[in-house]
Amino acid sequence: MIKTTYASHSDNIYQNAMHIEISINAEPSNYRHIKTDGLKVKYSVSGDRILRYYIDFRHTALNVHKVVSAPEISILQNKVDTLMASWDKKYEAHKKKESLTEREKGRRKHSGGERSKTKSASTHSLPHA
Image 1 (cartoon, rainbow, N blue to C red):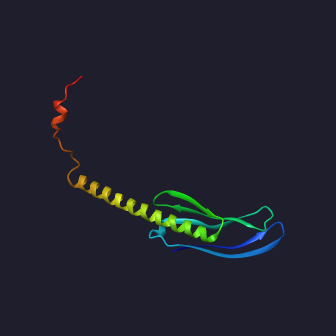
Image 2: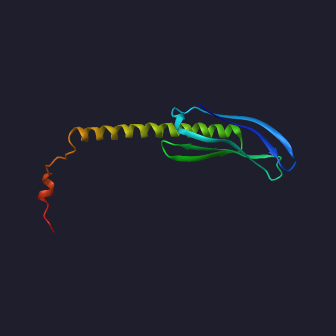
Image 3: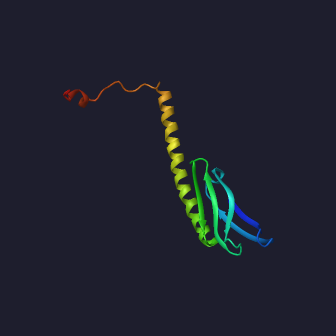
């Protein structure tokens, strides 16, 4: 499970410390490949309003990167859930493809790596221009 929390923020304009406890949970099946820098918050110029929440995600096995952002935590959580589901599907396809590639390499190694020396009849029956 990935749990990212934004804990506190110091407002430079007013020198007030704001403490915010926010958690975004993600439970992808391939969590060990997903890295995040944590939840970030973008404030208004005056520092009194939160404009946007965002999280930077990286999937090391798929070599993809995505910044997910939303004006509200509930929307952000839905986007994170959707992204994790999408990456789970892509990762399963990636693993399946790798598995097939490994099997094919094993077959080539086992058979000596030779290709069939028979040519198709259609290549001999075409006239040369």
